[in-house]
Image 1: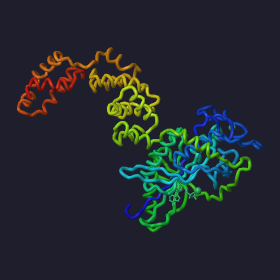
Image 2: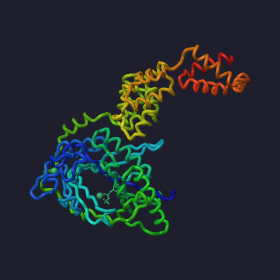
Image 3: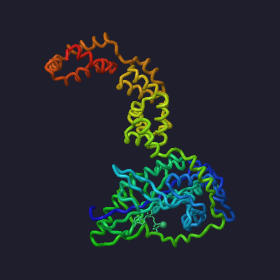
Image 4: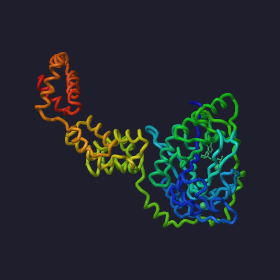
Length: 481
Ligand code: ADP
Ligand code: ZN
Ligand code: MG
């Protein structure tokens, strides 16, 4: 790749977390019966007039602020014409020349380097409905069904500058964007459920060139992994063309997840095809700067700031702080647990390790963890007091996840309290030493490594309940090393 520079720009749509749609009062609740959440406005019946939802503007402003944008005091809603049945008005209300937010940036950390990706704009628009094709796909379907429940839900479109330089960076940018929008509670950003969607533009140019090459736009990217894979495929496809002296055709391409390839879909629409013009049914949007400042003041602590605070206040490594602030949920969980038991190192190890592993395996967020931060603190207190060993504590946590019982109850019920009593341990040690003359001789010959083996045998004999430090000490005493 040394000869070519990859240039990527993303267009991301995020559904806003409002209760009502953006230009009518219909509910945005997911999963209702088809066409049960519709009205003359979102169906686009003649004569129906849109009325802007203030909460949607507020969330779009929040997004703009979280992405370091300028919030434009004056912006305009335009009609973007297009003709698909999922858009019954035959135009989408969007913003074209004068968007609500402009000129922001997001810093993306890739390894040791921080790369700044410019945000060209964040504008407000509405969702289309959903087509359900009766058959394998749109081409072979005998007919299509239409559900307009989604039509008219508020969306923001975030357009980056062509500042992204690799497929991996594109994925990292998206992860960062999702993190920011989730922290600001603008969108739940579930790519798999379609509340976050991304189209990726990509071109190559000779290294050192100051002009851009011809780009393609890739659609149908349904996961972060798909974004990276599709772009990786496209880098190779475009490079092969350019190196063979051919040209890249500007077009929209479709990512096929199972084949791992992009396919030409259609030639790219030109802006003129959309015939934008200001929607005469809506006033230009004027936002009061003092309202914007009030929204800014309400923004929560954002991920970078929270990460830095975790490093300063709790002495965590950058890596640990990054993992723990990766979602607002997880960061809250960590801090709530810390409120119960003030040991950042211990709590961070458990939250990043066992707790996160379990949550991931069960597809849950920290907020819906069956083990509350308070209950986790209960377990960690037992670890701190040496009442249970680390190994046993892991089993207890498993049991807590499964049954919802608190740690101390499980430990008592199952008799898991750690054995630190010298007499009990000595009896077990005596048996293990007798049964393992070889390793005992090794230890006496100065091969202290064998101590680990003997400790392990005692742990096994005690079903993990022996206090390993204690056992280690007692064995050393006994063998006089
Ligand atoms: P269009 O006129 O095709 O709509 P825009 O200039 O509006 O293109 O940009 C759309 C998206 O494509 C933006 O995210 C932008 O960063 C990206 N983009 C623009 N030019 C290129 C290019 N040459 N290579 C890759 N991405 C690009
Ligand atoms: Zn409606
Ligand atoms: Mg454009």
